[in-house]
Length: 136
Length: 412
Image (cartoon, rainbow over all chains, first blue to last red; front, side):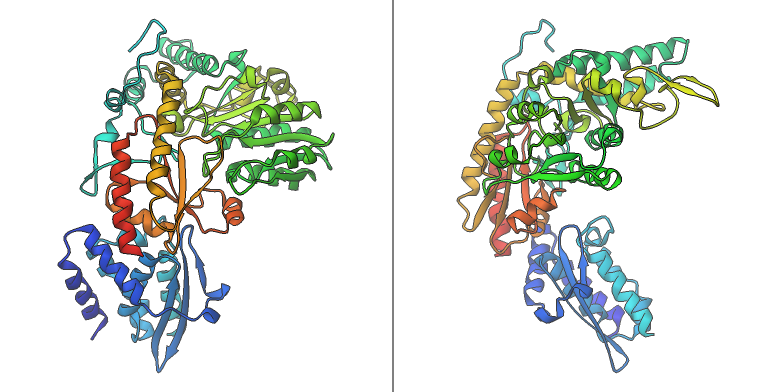
């Protein structure tokens, strides 16, 4: 599946929810399902300090493809991280670096990625892209 | 509106009609606004006063001979007198307009701080907002002063016996909050002021969370400085007040140079204007000052005792209902508290709960509330804070409780 196809798949999944609370219920479930990164990987150099929630991001390149694992102390943040990882994992550094993550806006979650939202997500996306640029 | 000085009976449904924002919808629900600790909503007459100023009366103040300039000057100086009366300051020139509480505290740190020297001591408390911590840290760095902190107990009350130990003849200033923005604790400032004066120090009271809830009389308190923000007392943003005793303000050097604050300028020597202008360089927030006067007039027509009783009842009702949830803990259980309810729930991040409440039309604050040292004390990442104003109702709390229940069912 291409990056664009993965984005479209998420947009379709969210299309069935017309109520905000249902949408968030789904995000919370995704957050609960996301594999937690091990405590030894939750080091300060991997920590992205938001004003409200904290995010840890671990980046690797395997066989020329990006591999991200991440965690957060807030479950909604974690659910959104799960979506980002689903879209960006196993893509080439170039694909990640140049990706337009339009699905976030399409499913109505762009407020979470605003730099003023202070949940660490905007910084995380930036860090994901920078690591992809460094690997390309 | 009342004009004969007699307070009207407290009627929340009538009062709510004065605040247009309370009647809007958010995320498809009726707004429940419980973030009054961050900022209050504005009554229509304040909103109208802002429009009227820019529509009818806009001019620069203090210098113009023309009609509009004199009108704007009169309105601005009348607002100063309204504020003077409200906090019972002896003189109107003791009421300085600033940008807000933060600016007021920084004014004292920058100006009074110039008179401090190495080894002088400044005392703050463990429950201070960052704006009453950082300016003093910066001053200590600049002047070699020492910063001391009054500790708190688990309930979120100042440990006054520890305070006694911190006071020394070197204490130059004690700067404490009247009411904690995070915990709602009402501090024993009368005792702090008296004891500090006994060792010859000054006292600054951060009143950002108090003037809107309880009657403040700066003469009865005998505080040396009192700071508050307009936007938390139903006025506009970007304007605030620093009250200071004239004899202290007179000794303090100006901290910003510019227009309005000078008596005479030559390239050889400049002399400074009198109070309050000495501390009000440049064109101020004229409309902000005037409309703060409007907001204070509105507030002074209400019965503050009735307001306090209503707000205390709201907080008590909310706490009782919240404590029914398993694993929920109220942060800040001081004996003397105002209408702030801060809480955490085991296994639930405040950010998640705040996000879900928002989607149900409820505005609360989540996070560390600019009091990170306090969060460290309780070893928590933050709290969810519901802070009530007199226009809030028990019915709104019922909606809030229902929304908390729904959110916790999703998160746990």
